[in-house]
Image 1 (spheres, rainbow, N blue to C red):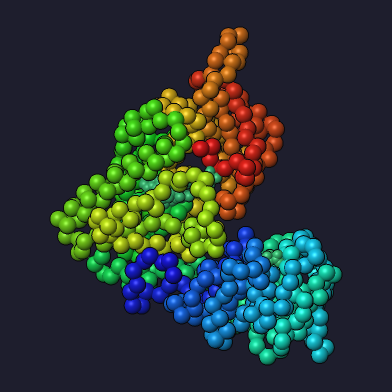
Image 2: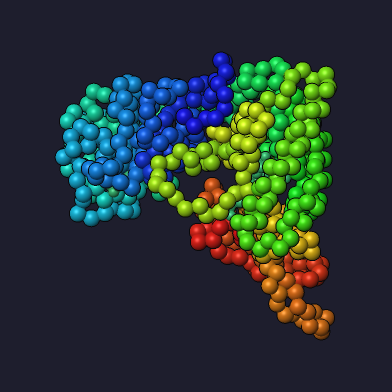
Length: 546
Ligand SMILES: Nc1ncnc2c1ncn2[C@@H]1O[C@H](COP(=O)(O)OP(=O)(O)OP(=O)(O)O)[C@@H](O)[C@H]1O
Ligand SMILES: O=c1[nH]c(=O)c2[nH+]cn([C@@H]3O[C@H](COP(=O)(O)O)[C@@H](O)[C@H]3O)c2[nH]1
Ligand SMILES: NC(=O)CC[C@H](N)C(=O)O
Ligand SMILES: [Mg+2]
């Protein structure tokens, strides 16, 4: 099931504690939106690949949703669901490919390639049966705009099914079985382009599956604290890397709440953090959160090692590797110190702030996809540490989306300012300096970044932007300042809005704001004579420059 954490009796995972709708992924780009929409309704949902064997589940879902997907059910090699889903006796909803899969299973000649693709809006009307609209469409009696994206279609109703909604182009826009709670939709209720899509998913999850709407961060917090205590026992100790970022701060606070002083945090100052960041984080974590923290100043080691490296991937790999070396040394020191203290047990666990999108990424049903960039990857850390030092992994956030992590942070009483911080990558400013990283360039990037972020805060824009920073382009440009010719670096400002950091749009600043920031940077940061604003969306750009 992909959960690397050790099992312990009584340490219940969310899908064992909360009513869960299981979404099986056939590779649609929208699958994860199904789980998102359900969680927004306070119904817990998890996604697994369509190849999941039902016998291997360690929980019983209250309902199953089969997602859309790029394949055609009738093609050789197309994915098919484990037929055991039908033996669970729980409601099933097929969306697009998922519906075609249901029809195809009933009889392969139910599904054919349509004459043309249907992509975009369509008007859907619920069709009453015996004068009554189906449970799936309760409260949705009026026509609604839905979003379609398919080329294949049902040519006839599978045996035992009837139509519960039609659209302009699809006679079988929504179908249900006469006796069993099995449903199919040709359109996508999970996308925001579908009107009342969330209402429809609620009708399925709550009305039909009978799920309780009790997935709240306060309930999760209680469950997770119990789970961590059971897992770690009353003697075990936990070690964790913290950056001051949202994820590691929330994970650390949660750990502190669960096991108190048996949690040990390490912050590595890699020399490419923001202005005063290391000091600020130390203060925040120690004072506000009361966390037991070791700060390792390795800035010289990182900066000297980065000398002469211009290739982005090489920079990332160097930083990732050095980070692990330092962390291992510190872990050893802490362990040795803990062994000599009167603290009860040995350090057995390693805390990691993995989030659900990372998990989804690894569970999605897809062919091999190209690596865009190597994230500095503390993901490499536990493997070496678990083998080398026998540490077991603990990942309390692995089922949460970023906004859920923020809500959990608030639940834990973490200050709003920490909870709402923009993400900051592990390799830090090093991937925001194009080409070689030098102390001079780091200083310039820090100062420019500090001005940009302070102005964003002053203008009340910080929470409207998902991530922002200033980068340095060390190819220089000519300028004139105080009647003198100057030849200086170019600053690139970047600010984006995004929900999942997979795609992003450049933030639209008022012109006067950009001019003000430009003015301050050229006047206050030595060595800079030009400021540009990067308007590239993702794709084709990425959020970081390297
Ligand atoms: N300077 C650092 N010192 C110690 N650990 C770090 C450092 N930078 C990153 N990490 C570790 O790497 C993990 C991944 O970094 P990432 O930036 O994705 O998360 P974050 O910093 O906790 O939160 P955010 O996404 O808000 O920045 C962190 O959770 C932390 O465990
Ligand atoms: O901890 C991290 N280590 C990394 O190596 C790393 N690279 C990118 N990022 C962050 O990921 C998000 C997407 O960034 P990209 O569009 O540049 O891939 C953005 O939020 C980036 O800041 C990283 N975070
Ligand atoms: N969005 C989908 O699930 C598409 C299903 C199938 N590939 C079709 O074209 O009809
Ligand atoms: Mg970070």
